[in-house]
Image (cartoon, rainbow, N blue to C red):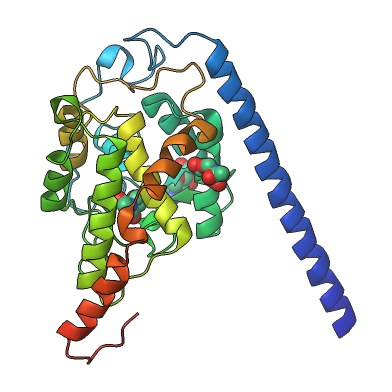
Length: 302
Ligand SMILES: *[C@@H]1O[C@H](CO)[C@@H](O)[C@H](O)[C@H]1NC(C)=O
Ligand SMILES: *[C@@H]1O[C@H](CO)[C@@H](O)[C@H](O)[C@H]1NC(C)=O
Ligand SMILES: *[C@@H]1O[C@H](CO)[C@@H](O)[C@H](O)[C@H]1NC(C)=O
């Protein structure tokens, strides 16, 4: 083939794939908006009836919890691990389809169908596997700086421990005792403060520390999940974050008929992220300088 045809074909294929991506996103965001309005005008599901009948967890009865066994695949996401620990996803955490993940997240945690489609599709895109046919092991999502990123509230940075399935109990304990809401439950301000502090500490300790806008938003999304789906309740979060276990009798605190939409979720994610003082007061940059000084200038500072 002559060069001109190669170039033309590539431009055309590139265009088709961008248009496809754009159309998919536009469709997902439009449906998400409609679901948000639907949630506003319909009554919530009654307490005790959020998880649909016939699905594991209905009536607060979660299937047996077993911690991961030798050789099982786990990842940096406590909620995905919990689903495997209860057998809602395969207990070995392997060979999971994106469709299966979509259904399980929707029914277990009451995220909206749009969110449950968008996130696995996004992960599939990063892993180079199509949503419709792709399969993955939980640990696959921990490729550094795809989904997994530094300054987690529940994991040490991958620079310090490559096994991102390992729970960092001291970090989790700090989250659990930081709530300033009623009964010590977590508030938005608590999450902004915790995320800011972690970013500073991670940057001070990790010579390979990195952080992009997208990863900051993921981090704020994780924090916002604790506030929305878990209602900030530290008694429930103790089991979820320390053992990756769903407590008996638990159900999602978001009871909307169509679940937590992306639009509504962003109403928590954005204030949490924008409320991080350390992002603007220079402490993150200062942490980098301190680490550089501590190494006597032997490392390049990021
Ligand atoms: C994953 O599951 C599919 C369908 O059951 C099966 O064909 C495939 O061999 C499995 N792959 C692995 C690595 O177990
Ligand atoms: C958010 O979740 C991802 C995926 O589990 C994890 O890698 C990341 O470190 C988490 N971020 C925070 C701030 O907890
Ligand atoms: C809202 O949230 C979704 C995912 O949760 C994200 O992809 C989208 O970009 C967000 N929109 C805004 C305006 O932040």
